[in-house]
Image 1 (cartoon, helix red, strand yellow):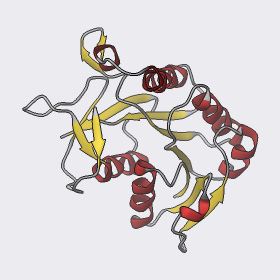
Image 2: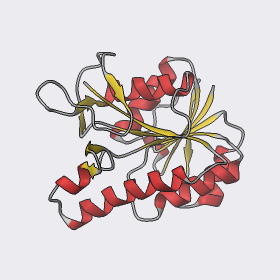
Image 3: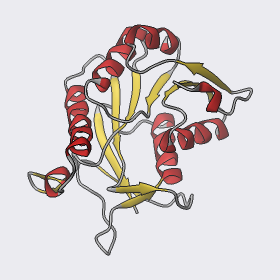
Length: 203
């Protein structure tokens, strides 16, 4: 597939890029600092800003799918969604947040946390992004929430997927490695099972 990856140099984005490349996909690796992208015969670094919908749309045009892995910031997800729609690409996977996952009926993870205001704003934007996508009928979107804890770790290929509820292990922990998250995301890209849905992951 020809995939446009927005945010290709971050902790999660770089792992998604590696996973896409290892499976033979041709990737336009879009970043504000494309010099940080390891170019190859299948990875083509591109410079663009996710906040510039018009310019970004031009880079996205002609791809089979778009994956965005950029940090949430107020208003940024609206710009991303606008860019994808302008590009004409239908398949869109957004790296989501865990804050909007349910920990009990009617209770979201974000509402159980005491956080500094800047962090809360980021989490609220993630929640707003999901709500924006749920109103979209034009895009074949997927919002992929990580576990409550995501970070460096093993590439095991062994994990569980869920829907709108936080996935926890036998000890009540919700965690996933960057690498295993990337595996599940590219799996979804290759074999869509959550079109116009949110899903999540955990051990």
